[in-house]
Every structure is written in structure tokens, then in C-alpha cells.
Image 1 (tube, rainbow, N blue to C red):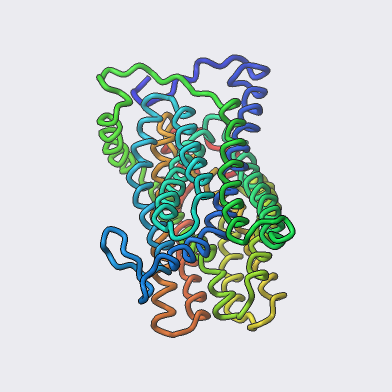
Image 2 (cartoon, rainbow, N blue to C red):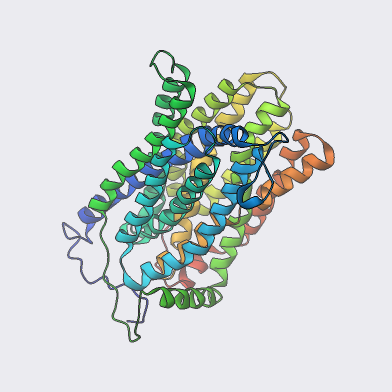
Length: 460
């Protein structure tokens, strides 16, 4: 067995051993709950509450010209949140490949997952203390939480090839996304009840926001216990070099991983297609509220309700597209979702201003394709990863997901700057889905799976 190959001889028969059907189902049920745990951070903290609240805190610390001065550098208070998110992406990009390499070299994904998850959960819970003019505290906690979530997702995703047989992965991945969207919607409802009725609960508006932020961290930490109890580490074959798993060895393995990926050009071709169309997806998620408020003139209640609608329908979309993939294959189903994305964004260009019902219709369409396109992309990529290098390759996948999604917002911003129209900005995103579709069509996925040394599912 070559170095880097996972020793899978610790299982027993298909009945009740740890690698048998019953053992896999137990791990799968535990695996779903990490999405259930951490998705609340993405929904309640990153998407809804933290951006406006941190901006308010920064403005309280600003000078007469609206600037704050971290490390003596003049920064507009309204830019603090965006810059903190950008810094968190840089931190995550630096750390993710290292953690992935160490995880595969040692086989100890679970302790690393626990460390990343509880670092992020603690930082999120600490946002309760974000009040007054403590914008630097808020920026620091955001950077830590966001980077920690990205790192934890590398390890979480890397379990998929180990806990699901090839024919199971579309279903398992889709259920994981569905669990995440379910928890995000549920907690967001609770948050909105507290926020909208904070006076009846005897708390200030600021305190209600801080409780919503901190509760996401507590939820994240509490439900992380489930996957940590159910998931298990696999033994790794003995290595002939010293220092395996150390930081230096991790960086050396990262360099080796990059070189190794050149030996799998079809896997890289899929990653390129994913990078392009996922950039469009992430930009729609981050800019839809701006389009709704600035171009369509919708109020905050409408926008938050639309986000909740997306969360609810994304559950049905992820499960439904998972079933479609079992019938038509993951690649065809993803291509269908990209066609739906293109039509949806095109329709968004024509939405009338001041008409919430049409914005809700747009949110519904986005929700139905959002979860499925993400879940099936993850499961399809899992077939293209050489065995024993799951965490390393998924670190690159996660970098494509989180670390490279800057081009879409840049195109969106430039389109608005040049035209002065958010309608022109939103329609510019069609290019990402069309180009991603064209690139994915050209990837021979069956040949790519074979080239990675993995069994080819009947439908893919």
C-alpha cells in the first residue's frame, strides 16, 4: 500500500461491522449533524445579523468623517465588515491546505474537526460582548469564526468518501445540505421572534442581536457533539519518513498534493467548472439583498423573510435534486440546475420595483436549485478524489468554494460602477452560470472517476 493510502482493513462484514452497512449508516447520521450545527452561523450570523450590527458598532467608533483607524489606517466604518470577511478568507486559504494535509497524513480528522468547530463556536458565542464601539473585537471574532468554519468544512467534506459507498454519495450529500438548511431556517425563525419582539422580552434591540449572535455559537458547539460521537478516524498506512503529521511535513505534503493534482487533469477540469459556476452562486447569495433593497426598494422585513424562504425551500430542493441524480446522474442534474440558475437570474432582471411577491418568487426559485447544486457538486467531486487524499483534495475544493469567490462580486461591482444600474449588475452574473455549464459539459466524469482509481457508479 502506497504512502497516503488509507488502510480500510479494520471493517468487518456488511452487516454490523464499522465499515459495514449498519456502521456506515450510523456515521452518516452523525455526519449530517455537523451541517445541522454550523449552518446556523452562516444563516443567522453571516447573512442576517452581523453585517449591519458590526457596521453600527464601527460607526459608533468613527471620527467626524466616518472613518475608524485600526493600526492607524483610515478605514470607512461601512467597510469594516467586508474587509473582515476578506481577511478571514485569506486566513482560511492559508490554513485549509495545511490542515487537510495533516489530516490525511495522520488519519486523525476528528480531533482536527473538533478543534476547528469549537474555535469557531467560541468566537461566535463571544460576539455577545460586541457592544458600544468594540468594532475591533467584532472584526477579530468574525475573522476567527469564518476561517474556523471553512477549515472545519474541509474535514467534514473529507469524510464523505469514507462513510458512503459511491452509489450512496448523492443521497448522503443532499441530506447533509438539507439538515443544514433545516437548522438555519429553524433558528432564524427563533431569532426573528426575539428580534422583532425584543421589547416584550424586556431586552434592548442591541441585546437581542447579541443574543442571536451568541446563540448561534452555542448551537454550533452543542450539536457538534453528535458527529464527534458518531464519526471515527481511519488508520493510515505506516510511513517511512520522520515527522509525519508535523507542521513542516504538512506543508511538504501540500506541495506534493498540488503536484499530484496535475496528474489528474480531469479532476482539475471539474474544479475549474465548479469554481466558475459556484462563484456565480455565492455572488447571488451575497448580493441579492442589495438588489432587493437598492433596486427594488424592498424593506428589511421582506428581505429577511425572503432569506427564510430560501432556507426552507433549499431543503426540498436538495432532497429533490438528490433523487433526480439517482435517476439521471449527478452531472446531468447539476447541468439542469445551472440552466435553471441562468433562467432565474435572467428573470430577476425584469422584476418590478416595490412588488415583494415577485421577489419572493425569485427567492423560491433560488431556494429550489441552491441546495441541490451545492450538494451534488460535493458528491460528484468525492468520486474524483484519489483514495487516501480526501482531506487534501477537499481543502482545494473548499478553497474554490470560499477562497476564490471574489471574481463574481468584483464583476457585480464593476457592472454597477460602469452602468449605475443594479439590474445590469445582476444580469452580468448569467455569464458565470453559462460558462460553468459549458466547462462542465466537457468533463468526461466516468473517465475522471476511473482516472482517480475509484469505482464508477452506475449513474453519475
